[in-house]
Image (cartoon, rainbow, N blue to C red; front, side, top):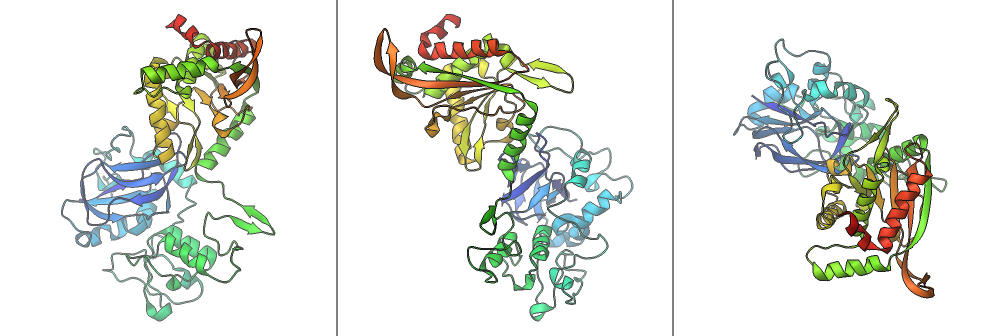
Length: 488
């Protein structure tokens, strides 16, 4: 019996993901918890393990396709069973794209007494290993699927998909009963060559751009992929080079018109836009700042490096240590506002977020339970998450759940900033570059290591006295790092 594994709910309100890379193909043997595909959400790239063992009978999407949560991802057959052995069983229910399967499911057309994927009601679909138990994906995400099916439009469940050539008046021939590919109708154009297109997204883009798919050179498997279509679009000479029109530009590419450039808001940028807009709309924030002498902090860093070179304790871990200590003294700043309940929630644990650059833009990884870590452990956690962010491998769980953010914008060569709070948190500490400046020290003007600390806070959770007290504590610890020893 075959088992259809659907795109799982990756958590944190994510409703869709883009297929980045398949690690298996039809005919491959897979085991339980084997990673079969890498998908990219609005927050991170995630390798998805399969909860079933057997032979890959069919994959339902290709690289570059965006799938809503709950859509068929891959069909797993019994071990040793080939796709040809199952052509009759999977042609309609789990065929390429899974269109008829999805429509019958949404219309309530399952056989009596059977659940999702042909399992009995007393045998719920097995949850994705590592993502927790719960209702089957169809029940869990049904409402979201109905609202968000914009990337892969479905066709009629009673007729094969109409190719773009048919829309232009060219006759089409229905697929033969034993073709095993009801979503890949042939075209009589171009000498009657059959056009194999698995992805509904490719067909949608072809219709949108007015492309006859018989003119597109397919990939090595004979299937026209999104990459093949985009390569064809980029090679067209209908418009001057460097000035693509909306009718021929690949999906997601910037659109230019009369000197303007339009760049789609998508992926992590879309999440950032939504979160920062919510922050500005809901949080009455205020910012305060102070210049501090960081000379002793830099000496403490050098001393720790000499004493414990293996610990890798730099400036950021020391600032994180100071910030965590300050939040224990001023717990009102480690909080969030529950507007629906009309409550301010003081969090018992400090989950410290910090800004980091990644191939997908600026992200905020979170060091969970930072309050329970030593400075060496903090340094290790920060280093690990920074490397993951640079490699684009940080997971959604490592990007969520923060209660306070530390932003070291000094790495960009700037002194100060008034950052936007990372909603739903209540505060953010910013640190500028540490540079040599003239400074009054013990009655004389000397060159010292000086930095600026800026602190933005939600004025609903505290007044200026609490915010000023926290910032002054941080500044004193930067100027006198030994002061932290008093509370250890």
